[in-house]
Length: 192
Image 1 (cartoon, rainbow, N blue to C red):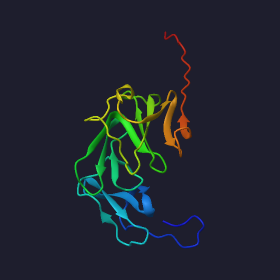
Image 2 (cartoon, rainbow, N blue to C red; image 1 turned 90 degrees about the vertical axis):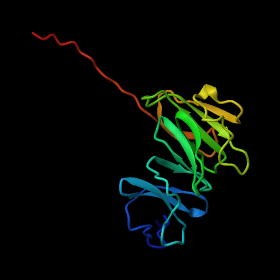
Image 3 (spheres, rainbow, N blue to C red; image 1 turned 180 degrees about the horizontal axis):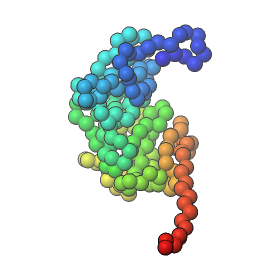
Image 4 (cartoon, one colour; image 1 turned 135 degrees about the horizontal axis):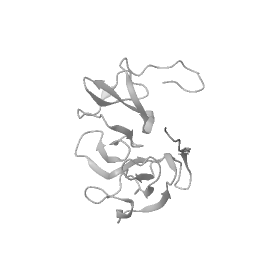
């Protein structure tokens, strides 16, 4: 890790092979390290030398950390997305057949619903979070679809038709995405 202005040389975070780094409040860095056949979540503060394990629960499906570093999300694209406390405790299911994440600043939680196997498309629901909270009050088991979200502060719905990757901006009106198109030419060739 090093500042982009190159005023100090890079600092190695760990001697092990670290993957999926994410920054949280105060510059703390979260990442996963392999131990045997599993990955575990570790953290290191800006001025620490030795990383520490945050949970003894395997973090094989780690996707991102909350802005304050209190929760980590697990679940691959279009699977069940679950929030787990970094200090241990019971997980909270965010949703099924979805992916989830926080926008910069942690004021909004973005939940993208897609059909299984769908790369582009679906709908992203933007939920405004209460002050000081990183998760909204969701129904038990989490919503099953974009139409199933009730009782939360939905501030925007984003149609994801033709859009693959999604990166939220500082508010729901600003975001980036990748668009993917496929063009094929089919020909009939008689075989003799």
